Image (cartoon, rainbow, N blue to C red; front, side, top):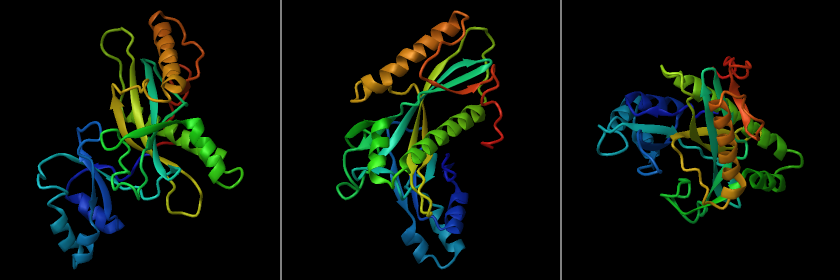
Length: 277
């Protein structure tokens, strides 16, 4: 569930874009935040004008803006986003790394859904689902599931919803192990909350499947308690995360909560990464 086209800008991006015929890219500052500086880089005209791959790469190498010295993160533009009532949705999944040795990672399955306030026909920036680009509404994940139930063929929505959840779990495991989480030299308990943002895309194939693509992995994320779904989704997460951290700090086993175990090395859960490599 990770966008395979995510990469820092360099000349190899231009070669890859030409070979794969990828004309639309999202570019953002590599160390940016809050959606600021995010824009669309459309290479269609440049490709059409180029007489060869070499000509295109030469033109493309200047980069998507005038200051090519900046570090830019490029992600392939997703052209078939999941929408509710014609408005794009993206998922914020809250992740608790409750212990680093042995590693314990929990995921809140009650995803917070960020919901664009405008359709693509109403705003050219509707694809940027961020409060700094447009006013956002919010939905519960259960509300998105109900909307899909009403729109998709009978019996298909539960499979789509389950597939999204499974893809998010795989992506969280991949990020945690790729980051190489390791304990600090002292023996104090270590924990952290992260916010993982995912775009959902139907793809262009005949199979009806919504794939989650990881967009951002946020440190010290805004929990969103003030949003419409705060009391229903984020407050239970804060409560259960607190109970887990307190129990582990007191040397007790983690209590039963609604959070899902993604990795628990003490119990051998999620430690085999052969399915995500």
